[in-house]
Amino acid sequence: MAITLRPTRAEIRLSAVRSNLQKLKETAAPARLLFVVKANAYGHGAPELARLAEREKLAWGFGVSSVEEGLALRAAGIISPVLVLGSLYPFESFVEAISADLLVTIASLDAARQVIDAARKLGKKAVCHIKLETGMGRIGARKPSALKIYDELSASGAVSVGGMYTHLASADTDPRYTAEQLGFFGETAEELAARGARGLLLHAANSCAAVNLPESRRDMVRCGIAAYGLAAGFEPALSLKTSIVFIKTVREGAYISYDKSFRADRPMKIATLPAGYGDGYLRRFSNRADVLIGGLRCRVLGNVTMDMIMADVTAVRDAAVGSEAVLLGRQGSEEITAAELAGIAGTITYEIVTLISARVPRVYVE
Image 1 (cartoon, rainbow, N blue to C red):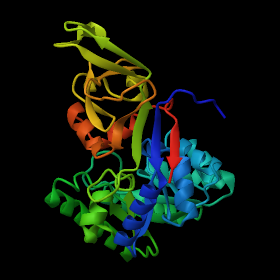
Image 2: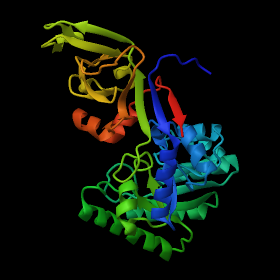
Image 3: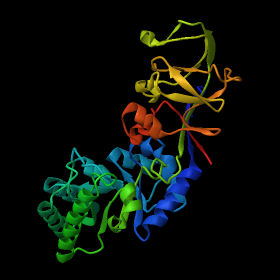
Image 4: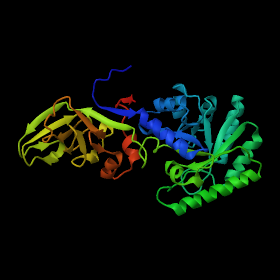
């Protein structure tokens, strides 16, 4: 195990993830829950959280974005179904996916023929889910192509069609468009049933739809952001923490950080923290974000650098080298949320947590 001495770390509370998954599972029932753990579980650590969910039977299976992510779960000992949500290319990826018992997404006739060939070469039946395009405009087959894909896969004898799904583009912002997408999805499901399709897992709902649109739940829901507590009504699981490594007092007129981007208007006590954009703490937070030290909000001063930031601790009586600093999360009665940081950066909460870099250790606490 690598030695970790630098105090910067991301703490993930397993109790929060457990509670969120249980709430989603109960809300969606009898639909199954696919726990989306792509992008290293949105920065929270995919192997550890997948093991938790599998061990405690909190999810039917897991969603990943690539074969590589699926293989990493298998290497971590995960035996539950793993669905690769991305479009596989190069087509040689199908061989690796089938060998590892990953469920693959099929979104074109070319891909359907490639997965049939790969399954026949391996002498092992593949399982796939057909991706239907209903308005996201990313990957997926329109209804006529989806029906042809189903016919070709079903007739092959080499591939089992385990499900069909679509991706809702605006479940949280546009109810009318979402209803249209669900309508297209339902029509295609009916035509597949008329062709004799039985036992397909139909899934369209993301976190927002799973919670707010019962009609979207079908046979399974795919939840990520709510599982990590970054949706209303759920408990945030991740905190980004570090410690003060240096304190100095500066006089009025002193400059802080690159480009003289902050000038002290009075004598100030400044703390240096070992975290920066190399850890995923965005440069856009310069002179705008707060950190929590001693239970107080302390403004980040000057430009965020690659490895360090400075904060105003003038009002923190007991601030010292070694004092804990919270960049994301709660300390005492104060809290800095991912939504707050996303607002400062002009982005979304997903990006705030997924950008926390690999050099930041993930520490799991109950």
